[in-house]
Image 1: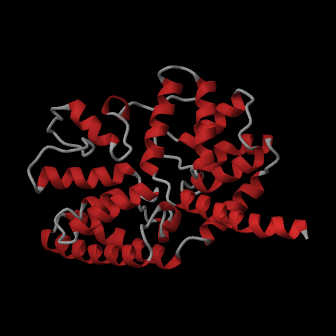
Image 2: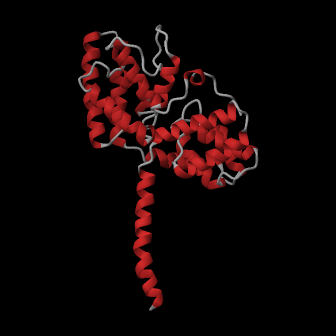
Image 3: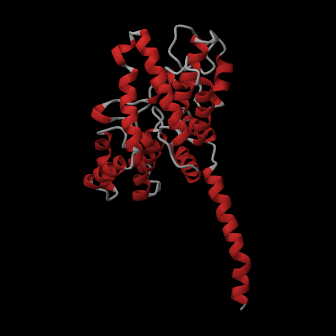
Length: 290
């Protein structure tokens, strides 16, 4: 009876705790994550403290599902460093988390076979997991965006009338996707579409700067940056191009290639931090090899 009484009071507390931590995990702000990654990356590359970087990455990945951003490649860096310094990164479990992060980049898994094999994962299993990942992509979106990217580059965008027409159609597709499926992230549609169509999102969004839907895209993409679905660079690229070419103002993030130089680097870096971008002095540096 005493045991039942204890369960009667503890049970609801456990449920409340589970809901609290589930909501906390779900509502994590990835801008905080990206800024923390930038700080840890500095610990490793600038301060040359790899073991401290491993420790800090481990803490970060306990709170956030890892991303593996281009150039920094934080999760890959963490695993390679941990392996190099014989620190625990979760072994097989940690490597299984890496597979979907590298899966969009066809053939990239080959360079990891040695590491996978070291922890008991053979190449057949890696390839099977990548195949399973591909099966899990949203087929409807893959089909739609494969067509959209072909349409986006029709006639090399040299026909203004056709270009504007196609941009309007793609804007409608993007808005429909946002409203029905959320952000068309690399984990939803991959990077290579039907018939080998290359599908990086940043050029598609940079062509939305004249669309009447631009304010909607800007608002929603910022939300997706916070949720970890849209990478900060894609959002910044679109906003910078819009402000530079449409508003005729300085780029807030300094990310869009332009002949116009950024005047106030301190100000720009502060704004970049607001969406999780690294400071300009580091963002353009080539990634060190482990």
